[in-house]
Length: 429
Image 1: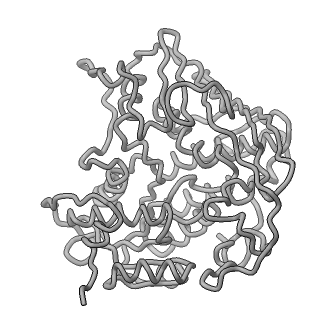
Image 2: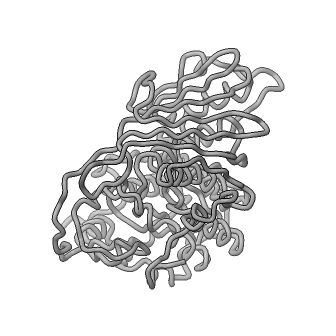
Image 3: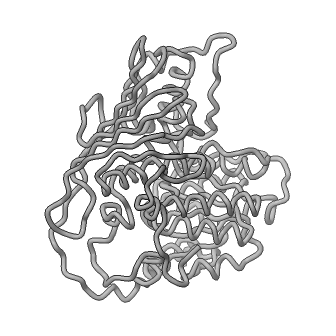
């Protein structure tokens, strides 16, 4: 009987195979490779596994463990990778000392807890965006990475894609003049009809899927991916796609460390169903020193291709960036721009045809060299902060003043109580 292997897994899933290259020696696992464990094996997590297996062909990484709370999906992934250990509980996987790093592709509400536990276990982390669902969680992730000296990369992979890089280079070199405003458009949040609670599937551990969330009966309107339209677990497209969009805006504006000082939001709540994110929404973020604004709008004024994007408005010109700067080419003027002598050169990992693989390798090389990855946890948290406080401004229905250094709202005790939420035992920070 034919026994499947990594190359057959990649071929079956359509992932590209990179040509092996020579790499310098390192202190990582067997054969000088980074031993990696994966939390999640389907959906976006399955894509991360494909990217890592593609990178494995270069000799940089080695997939040694898989974990998923769905027994059926885990068994299928294990069948395709028979030499890789399988785990139902990620905490058991973290006990292995030979695992150097983990890649986390679980739902948003599990990102922070699993990242903190990974850092405490001595493992570097690649975690999907948004980095967290509360400010408290994001700050805990930053603290854990610093305390345990771990490299944490957030999966805002547009920073490793050519179109976003071209747009960033064009803007950073002053081709738009002074940018005072960035406007965003996006399709509406969906609504859902009321759906009765049902027993969870026998192969899925519902309690562990909920993790730190308050316990509630199983409902199919939570997945696959539907959790994104429930405020406590997803927060709508502003926290999903918005994490990508705000990442690119902050990168292009060279504002990874800048925080908004005020937030105003309005929206139209759904009339029924489990989904509670606003159908239509507008959020205005105001920054100071330098002064500029970001306006997130659903639906907003649609510009260019794709269901979402952003427009940088400068005093000389404007630039449209469709989607998040990944799959749709940059405007011709940005594509053809050549950096002048002494101009701003913007970093991008570009060894592979797939920008997702580039983003993973950027993380691996950061671990090997000790530098920061292109979307390190502080930058990831700052992008997620915009998503989180935008939702809070909508929920509270009033203008909020934000102190980025203290990570709290100014003079608003009620709003500050919403910066964190209780977490269930044992799935807590």
